[in-house]
Every structure is written in structure tokens, then in C-alpha cells.
Length: 194
Image (tube, rainbow, N blue to C red; front, side):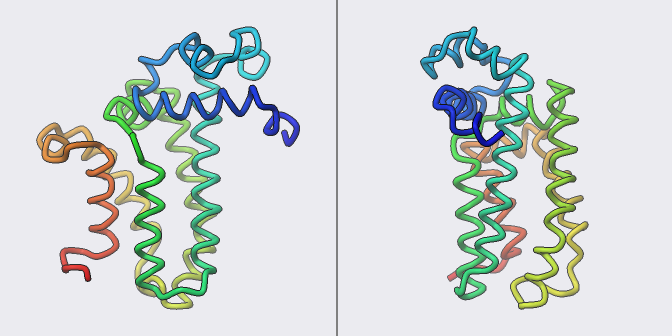
């Protein structure tokens, strides 16, 4: 896989697809649009991916793996707990930048069942791999030692259900703002921050 990851056309497809999927969701983006924007032919696209769904899965997998890597590095940094929490929120902001309601609908809420199932499975896999890092963070005092990480997993899936509520989503100017509100609520509760 290393050779393909370094292929400039493959990289262009991944980067372009991420940008377009985050902005417009899965259904509204065509293979042709991805190829045109990336400057890659459709023939080349199909050398790398059998279809748009497999490309979307690879893009999502890359995001999850990148997020896990950044989180693990952050846990090991020699900075205060407060700064680590702030950086975690910043990482969430970077990962959700330009994320649209269409993206949430297509990837998380079920308008694209194959993607929804993949996202749920990938999320569970990530959380299972994340447990060791979580326990390490608890041992060094970053997270409460009495908080079970499985609770956060369930709460995260609950957020996905909340995204279906038009009244709630209508309160926020963007999907990213709602996701950041959720992240800040988990990190700080309802107490004011400095």
C-alpha cells in the first residue's frame, strides 16, 4: 500500500474526494467531479478504486487513522492537561472543518446504508484501539479515572441520532459548530472556561 499512497494521482483523488465529500456529502458528488477537480482521468480513478463508495471508505479510514495518530501523539506531549484538552478540541475543529449536513446524512445517518455501516464499524474499531490510549491518559490524570470510555462511545453514537433533530441542528450555523459544541460539552460540561 505504501507505493500507492505515494502516487500523486492517488493522493489527488483522496484529497479532492475528502474536500468534496465534507462539503457536499456522498450522493451529490460524482466520480466525474472528483476526477475533474483532482485533474485525474476516470480511467485512472478506476485503476485505484472500483467505485465511489470504496473511495469514500478509504477517505474515511484515512481520517480515522490520522485522528488516532494525532490523538496518541497529543497524549504523550509534555503540556498541561488544560492545554491537551484545548488541543483535542482544536483537532476536532480541524477534522470537521467544512463538514456539511449532507456529509452527516450520507455517512452517518443512513441515507447511504453501506457507508453508514462502514462508518459505524470503523468507529467501533477505532474506539477499541483507542482504549489503551484512554487508560494511559487516565493513569496520568488527563481524564477522570472513574469515567468509562465505553460511555463516551455510546454518547458519540447518540450525537449521531441528535443530528436528525432539525430543531437542534437549526440552532447552529453549521454542522461543525454543533459537533464542536458537543465536544466542548464533553470536555468542560456547563462550566465556564478561562
